[in-house]
Length: 256
Ligand code: PGA
View 1 (cartoon, rainbow, N blue to C red):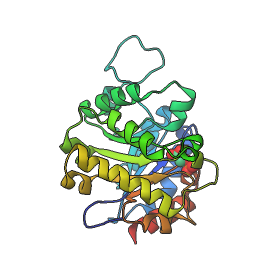
View 2: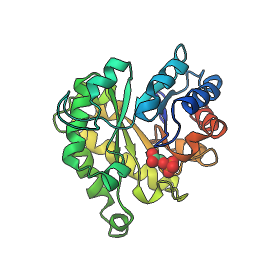
View 3: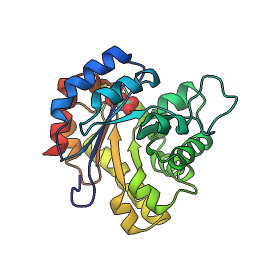
């Protein structure tokens, strides 16, 4: 983290867990630990739990997010939810391009770009996920993959939007939900190359202001050393975000 330049963002990605009742309960448990000015705390919950989570988080610093949004404002897209609808509900954040969506739901760099643009147009903040597959890392093309994903997603996104309303989450796919965490050095290396790309695409100033998280088996035990890296500005946390205790410990590590 470089606290002088960037406010760290600790975001929970609940994935397909916690309906409205469970969401209300877990937000309530996290609340006492989220009273920190040391980092921004975000909880990305299933669509059906958004309202319950928003109500439970009202009056606290906790921000609520969705886990996806469609690129069109409305229309014949059965089963989808638009960024405009999220905005109307009062949801400030949305995850775009998570690897599980890329893997199971046909998400491409093109649709990730379109969803990112739609979310920003609706006034939302985006947590944009990028990351290489295990085979790509073994082939030595991590840098190319991550650069390409980031570049395509950010096409037509302004410097101001990147600085203020985009959080980039570097999530190596082989580390997600596997218990295999990238080493702090491995994670920082890729975060630093994403920052270098932002400098190339925009400016050194925009790069210094862009929040770049790490995600992939981040937990209460390893958060401290990951967050100690200069280019890791927070985390996108799956499994460990389902436990108030573990998530609170990660918030604490980011607030230290
Ligand atoms: P994990 O998930 O922390 O369970 O590895 C991270 C993510 O998918 O965002």
